[in-house]
Image (cartoon, rainbow, N blue to C red):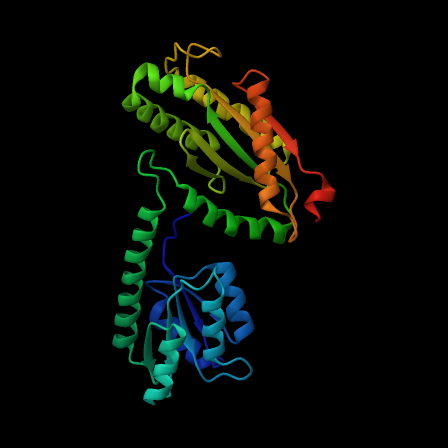
Length: 309
């Protein structure tokens, strides 16, 4: 979900320093603060700031260690870090840059320098984010590609495990798509995929739901905080969305229009749950849906004993 303002995490053990930076930044940015390393690491992971301003000299965990831990965590390593410090030795600056910091700001801070360097780093981050988004989009359908889905799955999986929520993974195949391509041509097949991607995206509704083109005519989706009953409701909505497109398919033995089959796997994961087993279960459910006549959803639930392995 887009933010009204970019978010900056200020980390400093001095309330005075935090107050100064907050006054400088709060009009243009959303500012969150931490007074120690433990809180800083927790906020970086949960709040996903766009930039971190990090003091070096702090009791307990110093700025170097915080930066090192941020860069070691796959969920925080892309957040740019600017050190804000009274230390002015080249060796210390070189150490911070080697750990992954993008810039230094000297104390006492100069307001124009702080604002200029923050602005520059956020602009660079926006450019990197745009390139990352382009790399994450399927060129044909405009929705997420397989690589992006797997990255988003990592992040969302961690969240549902932490919150002990149910989750449903689904696979959707276009029924008799090879026959469709042979009958109508590959350009029409491409148009079909684009129409389905748009229809499925609209049918999912919730911002937290994930959808991607996984391969060829197959789509994959993740429904957080969704049990088998909820998955059945969403699945029927997806099936109807495709049927409502009314794309002609005279070479299908299912219906005179394009339809899909859906296989879904539901579980309440924990830290030991094997996602590969969930994918396999969704694949088994998809096979069952096709065997039962296609144009339908089948939902398999992962046994608690398997989820707890």
